[in-house]
Length: 617
Image 1 (cartoon, rainbow, N blue to C red):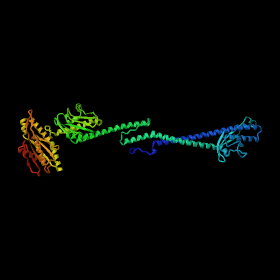
Image 2 (cartoon, rainbow, N blue to C red; image 1 turned 120 degrees about the horizontal axis):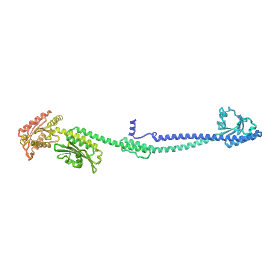
Image 3 (tube, rainbow, N blue to C red; image 1 turned 90 degrees about the horizontal axis):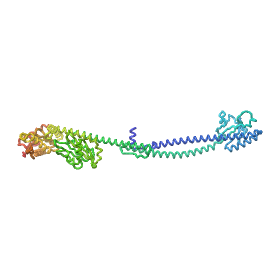
Image 4 (cartoon, rainbow, N blue to C red; image 1 turned 120 degrees about the vertical axis):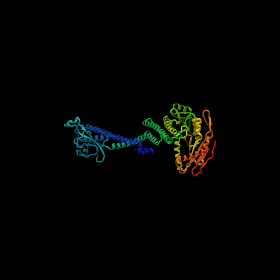
């Protein structure tokens, strides 16, 4: 049933005409009107019939009284045939006066004494006669008595029989105690009454038909305007909402029950729209947070976390600028930028993180307030929306995420709950990345640790073998480093290591992996480097170290530092890190034995083993 209703709404609200409420109510009103008219017509006919009987019964009683008076005096005078002729003439006058078909004067035993019209004379009615049987039905009815019957000529008659009352003068001759001496039977023709009833019924039928049609039309119009249209509008609106148009509303036409229903429907639709919008925002936020958690968990490098956060936020939120600054080293920071203004995508520097040039487009008051309160903040300034999320490790600011929307309408999307969730999840990802980075980073030089370098070298060896691509390895060792520690102290040695490490890192490609192998020795992995590229890269690293002296101590004493470099290419079939490291070490030792500050490359068996010309600072 639910699927049928849903299918009906999806296809549009279209019902057969006989299912419309206005049609059904109109049919019901028509049936009630017809029943009422039929009942009224029947009642009116009954009333007319009673009135007809009562009127003619009264006429019969009056006629009987008049006949009694007409008979009393002649009977006292001796009676005779002349008396009945007078009664016959009087009956004829009475017949014409009351509009009867026939009048008969009967004796107590049913003998016709006088009658209008023609009748067999003498004639006596007996109880077994059809007319008497219809009147008395085997028993005497109290007077006056009325019955209907069909005459021999087929006419429909109403016979009313009334007694002829006994006069006081009659007691002179008729000594027997009796209430009446005779009866008068008056026959009334029913045809005129039936014709009048037929005309009346026809007129009533015509009036009823016109009234019913008028009433039905009025009811249908009223129902269509007051019921069908509002219900159809509500059904269409419900169908539109089912199709996803949550902004659909119905105009309130009348202040009645349907007006109240429409108002409640609009309120329900508004609440439903708000709830759907809230659900969409929640789903969008959950999708955003889920994407952050999943993507950020795939990489533990801070730079990768920065890139993932910027990519997901730019993709999911209408932001025109995003800046993500993260602490790098002990006194440095790196900012990743994503925007529409041609900003530098990656900026690194030293000093306060808030001094990053990319943050110049974010209001400084917002950044300062977020840092001071140690919580996420957002403001709308001159039609632009801004937000800032600080990340702390104890009391130290280790990260700052700031953004700017295209317009102020971004604020409803970045509500406080979303900002808090972003702060928590990005902070957790950043904390994990920092812990991982600290675990694989040498604390003194900022390079990767030896274990990390060996792990990545093994991975690079397997990748090179699987995809048949070249792989190069450089081993570097600072020349006469022990003399620096002995002559200038270990702090000077540490200063030299930090400076040389920075030069190597700045010279390395993004794909290169630079690690501190131990003491003053470094390892650089160069994926995709052949013999020529490996030799050129080795010379570039050597030259960057020897390019300028390193200043040490309060007096800024310049020290000329050089480095010996040994390199090796992965041989075909070689898949162990120890093998290529051993060959690169051999080349490094040869470079040192040849006078230091030079490069030696150990190629695979397809290349000629050679030593480059010594280089001097």
